[in-house]
Amino acid sequence: MGANTVIKIIIYTVLTVKNSTPELIWLLDKISYHLHKECLVHMMRPQETKTTMHLKRHVIWQIGDGRSTKFWLDKWVSSNTSLFSSANQSYVDTTASVRDALNTAGDWDQKILMDNLSVDIINQILVLPTPSNFDGPDTVGWGGTSTLQFNVQSAYNTGNSKVY
Image (cartoon, rainbow, N blue to C red; front, side, top):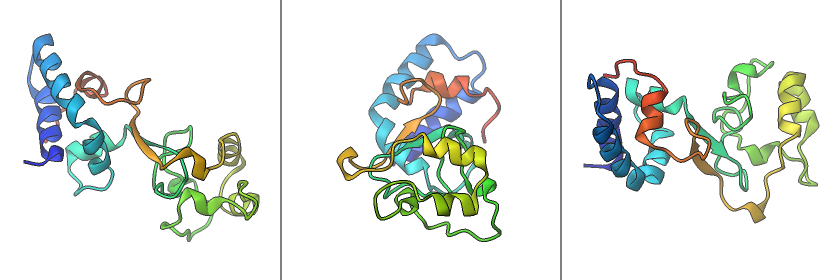
């Protein structure tokens, strides 16, 4: 059984079992701690299910070198939404990485930003540090906690709706 399957079972259990006890939540939290990094990466582009769609709403990218994060599709700006729905052009290159939005000097390419996004979104991007090779690879974090570390309690707190 893969780690992605295990995490789905954990989340399903916590979100669907009525009267989850603190002990159950604690046990599942300990299990999820050991699976955390592998599972978050697998959740980014899995086969879509209601469980993964629920969880993906809380997964965010932290920019390092900007090569792994998709500029239009991944959540990496402070609004915690993808930029795809904010594009003011009818066509955007959905394969572009965050690094592709830099000019040759390594600064944000303001022409690309101004041609494709609203001023509000541009301002959110311009306050972010530009991707750098010195920052290592992009990483995935859990937006349900202030530490960006996944735990079952935070997944439970993101919504007690039924997950199938």
